[in-house]
Length: 228
Image 1 (tube, rainbow, N blue to C red):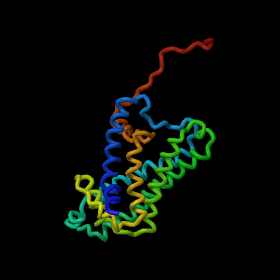
Image 2 (cartoon, helix red, strand yellow):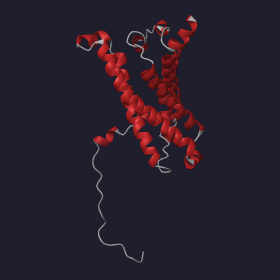
Image 3 (tube, rainbow, N blue to C red):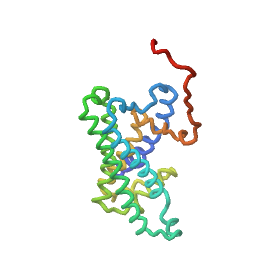
Image 4 (cartoon, rainbow, N blue to C red):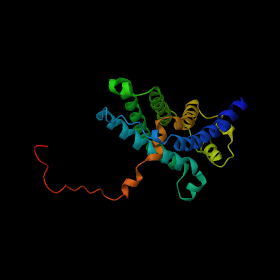
């Protein structure tokens, strides 16, 4: 049992994170022409809009919520007057809102891929696996929020900080409920799989749009002949 926890919560995380970093860098260098989201918007736009908006906004705020809630030790929050009870209360309601948005968005995207004939014809098995994995990870997360009120501040949170600082304690995860372990392992596996999927476009967010120069369109002088 001890070896299993060491493999799952020490070796496996670093294997996935190494694959994430090296895999994305290698693919960027060797496969730049396929570095895109493989968008199917031109095939069908209406149902994509609702799923994509819900998922992307939900997952972005979920990421920042996890980063802030897990990486900042509770003792520092105590100094600011944010007790563990307040921390858990805020994490529950904010996690419920953004996690539900991410889960419903991923579910809509999967439903679209499985039921729309045009999307099916243009899609690949890799696309279905990717979206299914997103549904599994976000679904496990929202299950934990609603049905499993487990205090992660003194188990999962310090384990994650241990991963960041290269000193993980896998035995912190022994008493963690199975649903949380599925969520953690699934999220790590998804990170490791991402370089080989459409998820590479996470590095291509259009942040430069906010500061780029305006595009100016001008009409050509004169009129085009009606005979042309």
